[in-house]
Image (cartoon, rainbow, N blue to C red; front, side):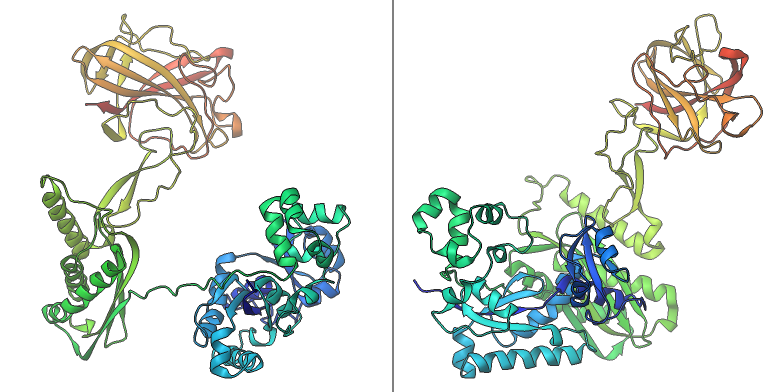
Length: 585
């Protein structure tokens, strides 16, 4: 089977171009838009991954460390690679190619390929196709205020994608059937320009320095010696790349826009007119096997103001759900701005998060599905009327204290924790988790059998076990206990640092409590010596069941607490204050 005739489109130094375009958008005057104006290089892991032509003339090469690159070119502009920005900047080029030839294969941002057969039949030849493609991208450059793509676009035609790429790098049209002769004198390094391929390194050590020498080897012996990767590289080196173009499938457009002419200032009229649009919005997603869980509603008024809101649903959104949220957003907007809000001229529904159809199922026997739906609708309605932050929901996040592990996020927003709960968090409270938290903690006292306050030694041990718990002048007997779990947080800060030992207590009624004993120095503030910070004058050190942790995210709990003076080693006095943090109901 002969190799497929292909056209390659290559934008030299595309990572540099994309990074400088992003810098130009950010209005950084120190960077030029045209990559050829100033020496520039893109770095990843402190190594050069791409550089401009002027930087190469100064001696900068791919793979150099940053210090060596700057030593060769002191005026080198250092750029950080942003692969997402590279893809976004290359998308207009791909769209321009797709307008002329469907089935564009994007190898990576900056390099694409299309089949020759269809375009040559339409435009009359390969040279005519290249001319049309160049003109189309040049028009794109002018339409986008000189993005610098047209002048740095190279085209090439050859048999197979690999030979076409090499032809594009040299701006050549290789006649059909002559790709092997064209590739023969090229270095084997062209198989992997990054220089990290073990196959290329092995070929060089074996003395095979050109693609022609490698292609001359028998295919069977290449497969036996180098495996499937070597066999595929062998086919590329010989110009026998018969793989067809793997054209990308343009993504379906699910955004629905509804224009009003003239402007409409009644909520019920807008909702009635938007019914067909919401049904189309949901049906288009369903036709592609998708269902929406989060969408953005954009409302434009005749005054030029725009109200944008993201709506999230625990399940999937039906057309009625979308319509209700349109009504709620308009009611909230008009109630806030009054007559000055103006009439609605445009509605736009943009799906943000979708799931495969059937990913969310209702309860098998009805269950609480209807009740959950009513609760979701009520909370969303309240949030619309009172504001986005009026309804909050809890999310579990990382931390050692129960209060630290509880975060709040607005209803409907993505429940993203501030601190990752997947981290180890040494010194965290062991299971089970408490059910009721007190913020701030309540005053309490923990007494031994003699009625004296329970103390903690500098090594984290308890000389007299807890026997009684006093909460708001009510005393209950303690039947079992666990702890202490000492925590030393922000030891370098006098304002927010704390030394705390936590206990779990169970009373005679079977109710469990989480209490804490905070150690506070009573000597005058004197810099870092204002609080005990060593293993001999605080709770730092090995406890009976647990370890010591040092973090930078602790905070001193508020509220008044009962206190008892204790004398530590060296004659220093500090206060042990007990407080009730949580209960296990």
